[in-house]
Length: 190
Image 1 (cartoon, rainbow, N blue to C red):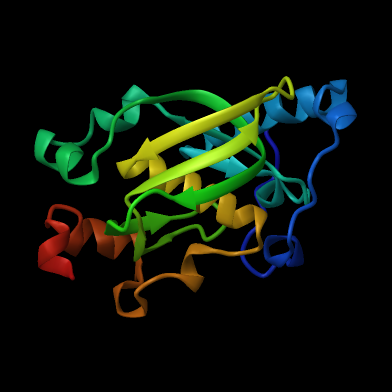
Image 2 (image 1 turned 45 degrees about the vertical axis):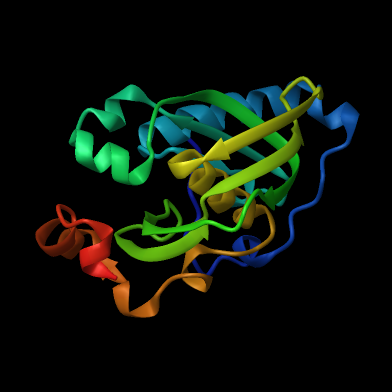
């Protein structure tokens, strides 16, 4: 079942989401929610979806950067973004911290801000401590595009949107991004 993705202006997108309890994590309702979020993310299509984006103030997100998304990019674009496939997984009640001081700028979009994109500076490497969909502890060390996805989705759980972090002069429609900026290296844009 595809869920409705709420758009910017919905109060749930600006709230701190609440952690899930161990009983909730293993419940049939949360298993069903995860399955619906996975379907919704893939159908959108997107690389991540947080529970607040479907109207639920819960610290839960699904993530997957499928091979099909990478096929449209040149080897140079993949290298610039440090992008590779990321298998489907769930993060629950995450804690995130940067590892190192390096940052990277790149365009981000959001399923809850349909039709727009902007340059956002993010930590190049992060560590995420969370629970998986079975309630088991997990530590994720990520870099590049995967680190960006994790930061973006965890921001949603804190009531933060990429527009709060964007370089405001880079804000553009997806149409104009494709027309003017898509093929340019980020150094040329910055």
